[in-house]
Length: 459
Image (cartoon, rainbow, N blue to C red):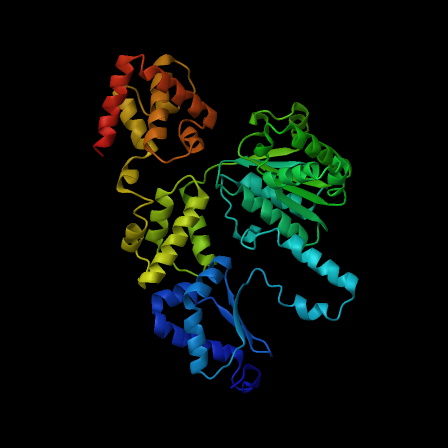
């Protein structure tokens, strides 16, 4: 039976429901719940089958592992299809092709241009999928305000800074996607700092003057540049960026930037650029607390159509503490591995699959445990390690504890600093270097640290 000859009483919805029943029987309930429960199905008149999935990761995985099974089941049901494609539900341009046949040449050129600009933004990085907590509330609120009224707030430029994997790119992408989708900005350009630099270099290599490079940005409504710290030590790129930056601000166009550190802490950045940054809003994102991490895991699982027991959510969020990207990566590994084995995701399965990420030593060697052992060795209280005092009897143990946290845990420097009274990551670096330099000179200190490490090694 050809796809376009389906009985009126047998809709595509009924067809897919029957296919899903057969798929579940073949691959098992666990894999079915993970990969197929949230899928949908569309069949065009020419026999092209479009299977809608939550996101691109699902599309790639199902295409690679289950296409043959789907084709086999459709054949069993006497449904002939010409092709099978997997379409993320957040990004569907299938309507464009038939429409362009009825449009003028100018209109057809405009549509691909709009599509290309929208494709700058990852479909998963939207405000709806961003989990708001105490660590990122200000950055989220500012991003949403700018997205709703680009160039019309005092947040221009808007600069978001923070460590790797904490959600800066997610917010920048969500901001640009919202502005285009809701029509608050007609033309939005999103670039990483490397892309901006490479485009500038191409103009120089091709012996075009900088004015032609500058004109490329002259008619945009919003410029978003990710990771501006990579402009460090590139005076030519900085000069061109500053020209573009100034002109866009004069024209009341919106500028949004991100960095892995405060802008004034970026080395070899022109002072007049830093000064202009200070005229807008600079806000940071900190590592999320446990409650926010649990919410992120739940949100990600829900987004991927997966149910996770509460104890699994707490297990993952409780042991991956500083990096949202690592949280999501661990969850994806858990989903994929469970699908291969056909097992439900229980706490036992989670511990087994995530063993290489969450080792038993990591479970015991927390920052707080190291603080406790260091405080005991120096005969002070744990609370004194976080106190804002420079007294030597406190400052030295604090530096030792920071050094040991960096050496014995996988926590980021920013997270370690936060656990010592909210200190900056640069303080942690300074403390670690100070202890390292003293180890070869101070025998008493070296023996003290070795004694603490013996206790840590016995954990």
